[in-house]
Image (cartoon, helix red, strand yellow):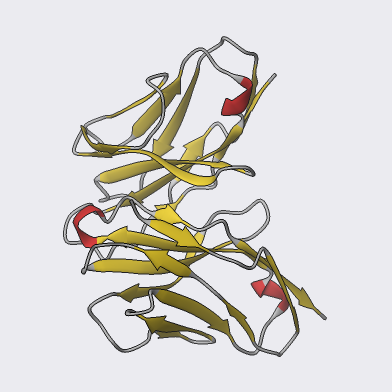
Amino acid sequence: AQTVTQSQPEMSVQEAETVTLSCTYDTSESDYYLFWYKQPPSRQMILVIRQEAYKQQNATENRFSVNFQKAAKSFSLKISDSQLGDAAMYFCAYSPRSNDYKLSFGAGTTVTVRA
Amino acid sequence: KAGVTQTPRYLIKTRGQQVTLSCSPISGHRSVSWYQQTPGQGLQFLFEYFSETQRNKGNFPGRFSGRQFSNSRSEMNVSTLELGDSALYLCASSYGTGSTGELFFGEGSRLTVL
């Protein structure tokens, strides 16, 4: 079974500063996807960034970047130049390519941005 | 392009009743999956439908069921409701084949069981 662990229940960051969210996962698959999803309060979950396991290059999307360490099964998210709109619950998620509709989620990290 | 639409957004039921939730995927998406979100258990996979067929099911009792129609719209049903079924039920859609793995989520249906 695949498990995803987010060890930080809450993180706080000053506006314009950088925050890093941690995620580790366990799988016996070699081909899979990793995701970070953002769920603002009472709003729908949206994809922040996606990484394919066979790509060694770390994914980036504007102010969001990941540090993907396949051997260590680690997948952290860095939010640079934090903005008030970044405040949300962030979920790390995993899916095998063979069943890419079946996400396994971590418990989530609540990010608070201080003005 | 319209997003994933879930109805109803909020509902209150009593123990023993049943409930049906509806999900309309993004146009062109043929895969619809359902997740249950609770504070205690987090986000858990319920089941997924593709072209009217259930391809996979999570570890939930048989009281949880679903179906998909020819237009890809999906419904999930929970019978004999229990207090522990109180949750946010999320629907997500994707193309289902040759996709990038990204799921597009609806806003959810928040079920309260009294």
